[in-house]
Length: 224
Image (cartoon, rainbow, N blue to C red; front, top):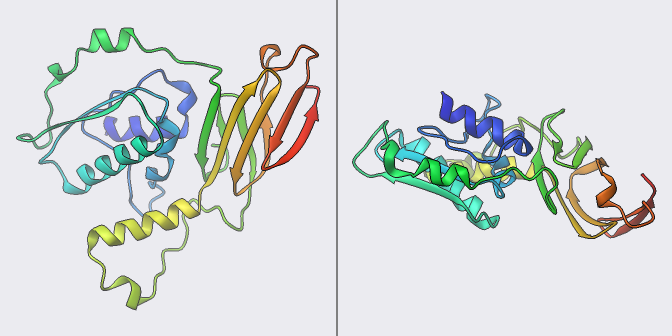
């Protein structure tokens, strides 16, 4: 299950990795088993990815991967590539990527100018220099109740049902988007976040060692 684990671990801890190379595996949409990590894929938008996958493999896996890369493109990912092999099932061709050339050019940035984090589980609110300390628990659920009226659910095909479940999961996920706009200036937009912490060093403050944070339109001035 190494491919699945690569997606799961990295989407929950995006600040730990310089690049990802999952092969045969993807993010999951598996309600009821705490495996719903498609909701976290946006976290990986800055990270280079090469995913090798046989197109004739489990159709649910392939569908999840295609959705994941659509989400990455929508999030502005610049170096995330799904490489499918039309004639293969649970397999891939390792030589499809020049691994030495690609991996020699990637670097983990410990202090990016922008941090985007989606999270729903307690203890998983940290990425780079931002940390969500408290969610709005009336909104955020790792495992929200999946109950839909029969008249809404039964007419839907599998694709529409998956999309409906995914929307519910997305709505049950906290989101933080933080940007360093100038020395000592940070702008933050959040959804379903009640409390957060910034982990700053001297270079992220102004020449007086102070910082001005605008969080959802409200300005806070602090001396760390």
